[in-house]
Length: 81
Image (cartoon, rainbow, N blue to C red; front, side, top):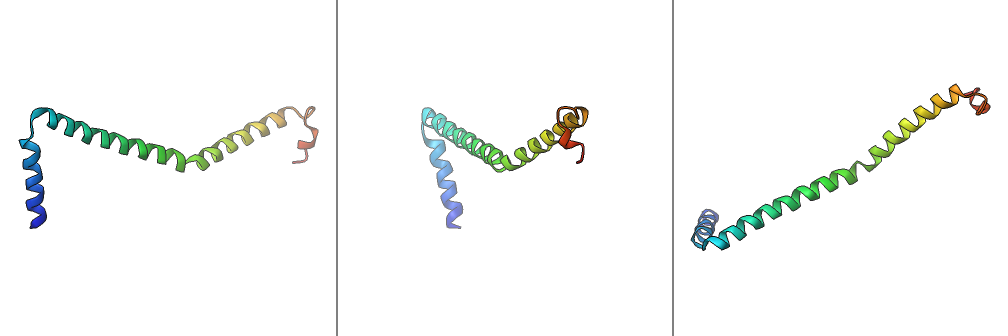
């Protein structure tokens, strides 16, 4: 109950302040949101770094094999593989 009253008071306080303050408040809110999404995206990229390496390794391996198979003169040791 107390919490509900408090939130209501908070809302009232925001509505009572003059226009410039209200603008500032909304801007701050927006900024916080923006920062949150930035952090999330950065985290996502950082957590997926191993996956990117895996993909790169796989592609590299694939193309190397292709290249070695087509050029046995340059890489004769690959023929036995």
